[in-house]
Length: 254
Image 1 (cartoon, one colour):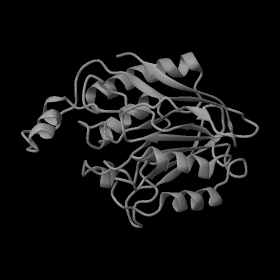
Image 2 (cartoon, helix red, strand yellow):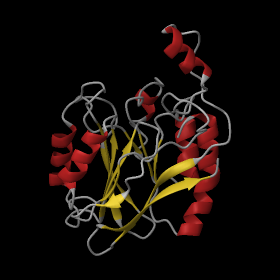
Image 3 (cartoon, rainbow, N blue to C red):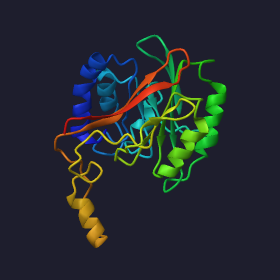
Image 4 (cartoon, rainbow, N blue to C red):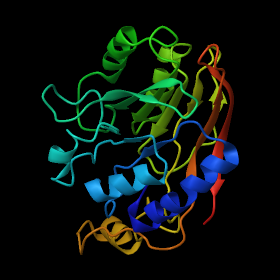
């Protein structure tokens, strides 16, 4: 979700989509919801009230300083699992879906072209060992916030058959590789953004273009304010196995 345009579109659409598609569980990545940088507690509340069951973050998790405080009391806000020990908040959580199923949501951050964190593969493996699909929970969703498609695909292979969904975030550009992996895990390299696509990654294009041309910042990055497209991934999961049956990209509006 990028800026006001993106979050308004999501808040308006979620109740209708839940009813229309009979959605049991909704996860929203909200790390760019506050002016493109981080999330505030008021925005988080709006997303949860609209129907999000959990909100994940990424490298902009703590751009809004207040997040360091409110993340401790907001149990449905999940920051990357592989932040250093002692970082406020939680990297995973178990939540009850509308159909009564227990869903483990894990957020992790990649390391290629990103700030160096603990190994996401080992951190996720430790989490899945402690909380296994069908032994401890009915479904597992991983939001892998990473730059490199290779790293995202490698993680998909690493956890195939052990989780229900691996969906990539961070690049703001939706990929066309949504599929069910051989072991039954739904996969997509990047869900894309909810925001104005007549932009540069959801930001008004003037400042990014100027910086590429001159290498000199002339102002702040500001979110584009045009009509938003909602992008995401829809997955049907087998209640018996916790693995994916069908997967499809979501593109609405804009």
